[in-house]
Amino acid sequence: MLSAIVAITFIGCQKAANPCIVPVPSSETRAASAGWQRGGNWMNQHEDINKVGETRKLDLVFLGDSISQGWGGEGRYVWQAAPAVWQEYYAKRNACSFGISGDGTQHVLWRIDHGNFDKAKPHVVVLLVGVNNVPSCAPEQIAEGVKAILDRLATKAPKTKILLLGLFPFGQKPEAPTRKKVEAVNALISKYEDKNRVFYQDIGRVFLLSNGEGNPDLMARDFLHLKPEGYRAWAKAIEYRLTQLLKD
Image 1 (cartoon, rainbow, N blue to C red):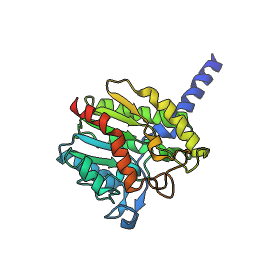
Image 2: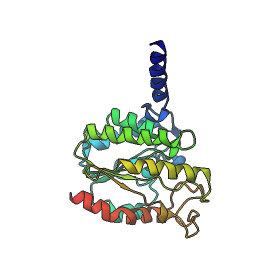
Image 3: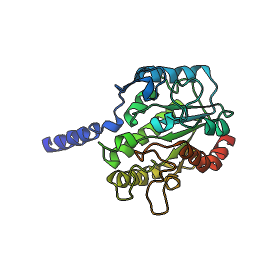
Image 4: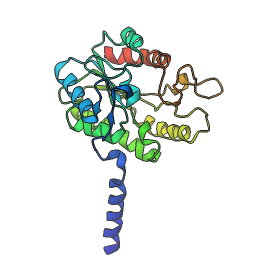
């Protein structure tokens, strides 16, 4: 009997040890030159997002980290990576980005628990998150964090459709360890598609050259973030699916 209790305790501790599913606020603080136009701490960004959700009718939300933050939108005091692309594709769609630089799944979970979707009930959320967990977490842990976000959104905004994107390529070369881990994460999270509320799309190939290396015309020097033309490639790649989901 004692051994059974020990085994159950051990399993429980293993589950609780996954940092990707434990909601926490971030300790990030950034200057205006680092992309947060008013400078300040992470909580300011979180509160800006809550205010957008409380005061605007939103049909489309991009949820995630710095890559999503780069879309910007009314009410977000952040550097906008591709304003012309945003204007062309999303400005007239009651859209905004709920991305915050540096966020992992655990931070997005905390934000959902603390107001981001208390008032905001968009038709569609484009979810791209987990790459900031890649350096420190296993693919299975990251996938569990993504699943926890999907479950939270189902509770907070049950009528919202989720366009779940596979993580974008991370690293210049196909053999980069970060690339391999991203591929493993995507293989796991692709299984979350139910074609009812959650729809999965992996657009990573659009950011690559024919030899599998990151395309320097679309990706920044870190081969993680995107240049303006990378945002255009992103918008074009999801436009058909997004249009269908917004119509539904």
